[in-house]
Length: 160
Image: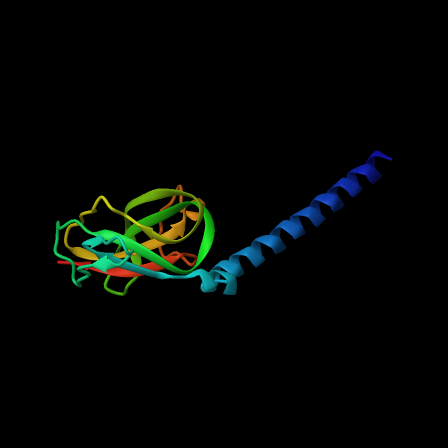
Protein backbone atom coordinates (compact mmCIF):
# COMPACT_ATOMS: atom_id res chain seq x y z
CA UNK A 1 0.00 0.00 0.00
CA UNK A 2 2.81 2.42 0.91
CA UNK A 3 4.63 1.62 -2.34
CA UNK A 4 1.48 2.33 -4.33
CA UNK A 5 1.00 5.72 -2.61
CA UNK A 6 4.66 6.54 -3.15
CA UNK A 7 4.40 5.67 -6.87
CA UNK A 8 1.28 7.86 -7.17
CA UNK A 9 3.08 10.78 -5.52
CA UNK A 10 6.10 10.36 -7.81
CA UNK A 11 3.82 10.25 -10.86
CA UNK A 12 1.99 13.40 -9.69
CA UNK A 13 5.30 15.21 -9.14
CA UNK A 14 6.52 14.17 -12.59
CA UNK A 15 3.32 15.50 -14.18
CA UNK A 16 3.62 18.77 -12.24
CA UNK A 17 7.25 19.13 -13.33
CA UNK A 18 6.25 18.53 -16.96
CA UNK A 19 3.57 21.23 -16.73
CA UNK A 20 6.05 23.70 -15.18
CA UNK A 21 8.69 23.04 -17.85
CA UNK A 22 6.12 23.44 -20.64
CA UNK A 23 4.82 26.70 -19.14
CA UNK A 24 8.37 28.00 -18.71
CA UNK A 25 9.25 27.21 -22.33
CA UNK A 26 6.09 28.93 -23.56
CA UNK A 27 6.90 31.98 -21.44
CA UNK A 28 10.47 32.15 -22.75
CA UNK A 29 9.40 31.97 -26.39
CA UNK A 30 6.75 34.63 -25.74
CA UNK A 31 9.47 36.96 -24.41
CA UNK A 32 11.63 36.46 -27.51
CA UNK A 33 9.18 38.42 -29.65
CA UNK A 34 6.85 41.13 -28.37
CA UNK A 35 3.20 40.16 -28.42
CA UNK A 36 0.81 41.98 -30.73
CA UNK A 37 -0.79 43.49 -27.62
CA UNK A 38 2.59 44.91 -26.55
CA UNK A 39 3.43 46.09 -30.06
CA UNK A 40 0.14 48.01 -30.21
CA UNK A 41 1.11 49.89 -27.03
CA UNK A 42 4.66 50.79 -28.12
CA UNK A 43 5.08 54.51 -28.41
CA UNK A 44 7.63 57.18 -29.22
CA UNK A 45 10.30 58.07 -26.66
CA UNK A 46 12.02 61.43 -27.26
CA UNK A 47 14.94 63.19 -25.55
CA UNK A 48 14.71 66.98 -25.35
CA UNK A 49 15.54 70.07 -23.31
CA UNK A 50 12.07 70.34 -21.80
CA UNK A 51 8.42 69.52 -22.44
CA UNK A 52 6.07 72.45 -23.00
CA UNK A 53 2.50 72.87 -21.69
CA UNK A 54 1.11 71.18 -24.82
CA UNK A 55 3.21 68.03 -24.24
CA UNK A 56 5.64 68.84 -27.06
CA UNK A 57 9.39 68.22 -26.86
CA UNK A 58 11.38 71.45 -27.08
CA UNK A 59 14.95 71.50 -28.44
CA UNK A 60 15.36 67.83 -29.29
CA UNK A 61 18.87 67.47 -30.74
CA UNK A 62 21.14 64.55 -31.52
CA UNK A 63 23.79 64.05 -30.36
CA UNK A 64 23.00 65.49 -26.93
CA UNK A 65 25.68 67.71 -25.32
CA UNK A 66 27.50 65.98 -22.44
CA UNK A 67 26.47 67.08 -18.94
CA UNK A 68 23.57 69.20 -20.28
CA UNK A 69 20.30 68.30 -18.51
CA UNK A 70 17.70 66.56 -20.67
CA UNK A 71 14.15 65.31 -20.18
CA UNK A 72 12.25 62.34 -21.57
CA UNK A 73 8.85 62.35 -23.25
CA UNK A 74 7.02 59.06 -23.83
CA UNK A 75 4.01 59.28 -26.13
CA UNK A 76 1.79 56.20 -26.51
CA UNK A 77 -0.73 55.75 -29.34
CA UNK A 78 -3.50 55.16 -26.80
CA UNK A 79 -4.01 55.65 -23.07
CA UNK A 80 -3.18 52.75 -20.76
CA UNK A 81 -4.08 51.96 -17.16
CA UNK A 82 -0.85 52.13 -15.16
CA UNK A 83 0.33 52.77 -11.59
CA UNK A 84 4.01 53.49 -12.26
CA UNK A 85 5.87 54.11 -15.50
CA UNK A 86 9.61 53.50 -15.40
CA UNK A 87 12.56 54.80 -17.36
CA UNK A 88 15.70 52.66 -17.57
CA UNK A 89 19.06 53.73 -19.05
CA UNK A 90 21.80 51.36 -20.24
CA UNK A 91 25.13 52.01 -21.98
CA UNK A 92 25.41 50.46 -25.45
CA UNK A 93 28.36 48.92 -27.24
CA UNK A 94 29.33 49.55 -30.89
CA UNK A 95 26.92 46.81 -32.03
CA UNK A 96 23.95 48.48 -30.32
CA UNK A 97 23.74 45.89 -27.52
CA UNK A 98 23.02 47.09 -23.98
CA UNK A 99 25.98 46.60 -21.67
CA UNK A 100 26.24 48.53 -18.39
CA UNK A 101 23.21 49.53 -16.35
CA UNK A 102 23.27 53.31 -15.73
CA UNK A 103 20.08 54.31 -13.90
CA UNK A 104 16.36 53.69 -13.46
CA UNK A 105 13.57 55.78 -12.01
CA UNK A 106 9.78 55.82 -11.96
CA UNK A 107 6.86 58.20 -12.10
CA UNK A 108 3.71 57.63 -10.07
CA UNK A 109 0.68 57.73 -12.39
CA UNK A 110 -2.16 55.74 -10.76
CA UNK A 111 -4.66 55.96 -13.56
CA UNK A 112 -5.07 56.09 -17.29
CA UNK A 113 -2.60 58.12 -19.36
CA UNK A 114 -1.01 58.34 -22.80
CA UNK A 115 1.76 60.89 -22.17
CA UNK A 116 4.58 60.60 -19.62
CA UNK A 117 7.46 63.01 -19.06
CA UNK A 118 10.32 63.87 -16.75
CA UNK A 119 10.73 67.49 -15.67
CA UNK A 120 13.78 67.60 -13.41
CA UNK A 121 16.49 67.15 -16.04
CA UNK A 122 18.94 64.25 -16.17
CA UNK A 123 22.64 64.38 -17.05
CA UNK A 124 24.89 61.76 -18.61
CA UNK A 125 28.58 61.75 -19.59
CA UNK A 126 29.59 61.20 -23.20
CA UNK A 127 28.63 57.78 -24.58
CA UNK A 128 25.97 55.75 -26.37
CA UNK A 129 22.87 54.82 -24.38
CA UNK A 130 19.53 53.05 -24.72
CA UNK A 131 16.62 54.64 -22.88
CA UNK A 132 13.51 52.54 -22.27
CA UNK A 133 10.03 53.46 -21.06
CA UNK A 134 8.59 50.43 -19.26
CA UNK A 135 5.87 49.19 -16.96
CA UNK A 136 7.66 49.59 -13.62
CA UNK A 137 6.63 46.13 -12.44
CA UNK A 138 8.41 44.62 -15.49
CA UNK A 139 11.81 46.12 -14.61
CA UNK A 140 14.88 43.97 -14.14
CA UNK A 141 15.34 43.80 -10.37
CA UNK A 142 18.36 41.70 -9.42
CA UNK A 143 20.20 41.61 -12.71
CA UNK A 144 20.19 44.62 -15.05
CA UNK A 145 21.01 43.07 -18.42
CA UNK A 146 19.05 45.55 -20.52
CA UNK A 147 18.01 44.58 -24.05
CA UNK A 148 14.34 44.66 -23.01
CA UNK A 149 11.97 42.73 -25.27
CA UNK A 150 8.88 44.34 -23.76
CA UNK A 151 8.75 48.11 -23.40
CA UNK A 152 6.44 51.08 -23.90
CA UNK A 153 9.02 53.11 -25.79
CA UNK A 154 12.72 53.00 -26.63
CA UNK A 155 15.31 55.31 -28.11
CA UNK A 156 19.04 55.50 -28.64
CA UNK A 157 20.74 58.49 -27.01
CA UNK A 158 24.16 59.64 -28.15
CA UNK A 159 25.85 62.05 -25.76
CA UNK A 160 28.97 63.93 -26.92
